Length: 203
Image (cartoon, rainbow, N blue to C red; front, side, top):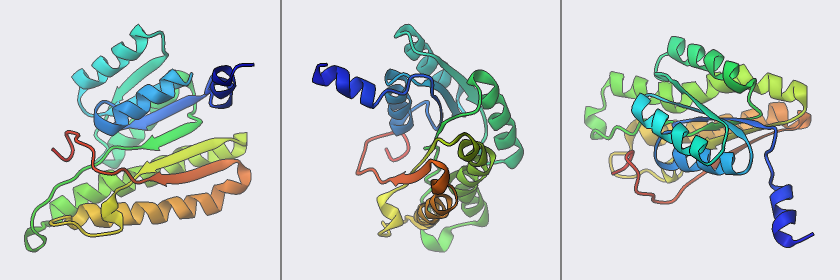
């Protein structure tokens, strides 16, 4: 067996289903591509239909299984509807990547309640609710991967980081709680903290 074959088998996701929120652009899109290249069937969730369709079309052109769901993750009704629609595409996900994010940056003294609420809804509530929807099923099946994309701002406040940094700090705490609950059943819950990446979110 060659080292390339060994690594391909070691990291193969053949037969697995992955759901990536915020997967139509930036870091989320790159993650969706990587999961698909590893063999997973990938369900991409985001708002903009044109970008979703383009992402899935590119994956399909390379022979990968992919589908998309357009959803507004800032509302609980929209999120729940998206979760059910997503599960219909390839079945219940084995891998959940929460990458969707809102990064609005008014000065702290001008941070309005609607900005706070929207930021928390997308950056914290959505990962919590999707975890509640899919985590128990992963635990019952004995395999699951929940991955939250957080931020350096979870650890150090940036200029005008405001609600964004708070939401990412709370998301890291959520991951620890999920890991404590589900890790005995084969479900890992982790956070990834990217460095500076030029994406539409922080351009």
